[in-house]
Image 1 (cartoon, one colour):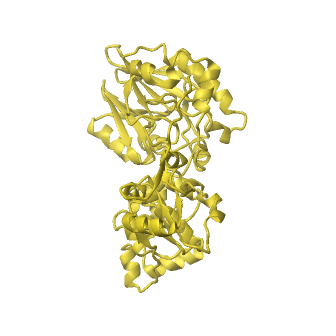
Image 2 (cartoon, one colour; image 1 turned 180 degrees about the vertical axis):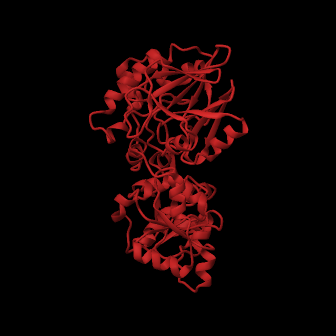
Image 3 (cartoon, one colour; image 1 turned 90 degrees about the horizontal axis):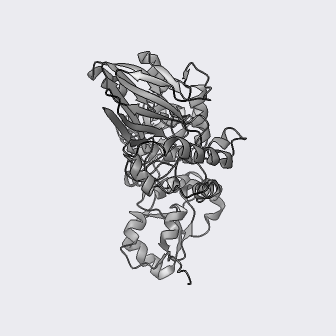
Length: 471
């Protein structure tokens, strides 16, 4: 059976494409739909259905544009009630894509409309399950997201539904089925996802903690709810966009694809109070940037950090990019619902320099320089990695303020004495540095290469030691 996984690493997302006998279907497409259309054209196939496993929280799906451009029907599982036309499938309903069959298995838990799709090939052999966020490789979908949209859907209720769905709908299926999840490691939709993006169901029954048949329902709830970190703030907003609908990506790109001279860029920034978002890498940004701009590098987990760090999803945005990277930035912004790009600096930062406009900069030091400073003066160090990273190993006496919490802890950054910032490799600390600069801090230094480089020096570090159990 032909099942193509289309994986997008920067948001740890997997869409799926199946085609048989001139008909095709897409499962959980991203916002930019032309690649799916191109695949179908290459296969001389018509896209018949767009299947959604649930209302996604971590990205805006491309189902509306795909349906509009191809005539495909949008399919959700039971209980889905969006503000646009769909086929609301019933549990166990079967759809045909050529000679393939797609069976709907309602698996509430991550959300109430969550649905798994069982794939059967042209000779009647069950091939695999497209599980959405119901079952990941090594984990299951977190049940605490829907409460941020519908108050009554508590994490306890949904965890109970997920237990029932897994025990009654998924675990009885054949061990040789291939599991095709919607996300892999790096997604915030689970807490223990594997770097592998497919597996057999039989192997998952052996190694996935959530599929342990010995777990009672209460034990299961405790296992999946323990250790969950707060979801990113943009998640509920993406859910609502997927339920209510959104502008076509073509419209978003047309509005944002306006190259501006340095003078026009500055005027628009002042007139609209747009956020200036610089997507260059950390080293180039640090050496010279437009004052008050924020740095989130395109070559990292760009969309996720935009969603974490820019509170208003409708924020007007002006882009500073490497030339010919502007459209990529707009598309990746749109994946998480940030459709407010109103232009970009034509020619990139060089055009700003040629116009004689002022630049700001951020002081940086190497790990070796940091080691000398730290050993000599014990200057305050602020570690902006996740708490779990900090707990695993950190510089002695370093203060941990995770990047995604920085806006709520600005008072903890001193203004009357110098301090040093670092993350794991330099990407996140530069985001933090740009935010601090924008808010008026100028008394800090960033460590090039972050903790990865610091760990090669003689700076004292504290490691987590697992406590022994007394027998």
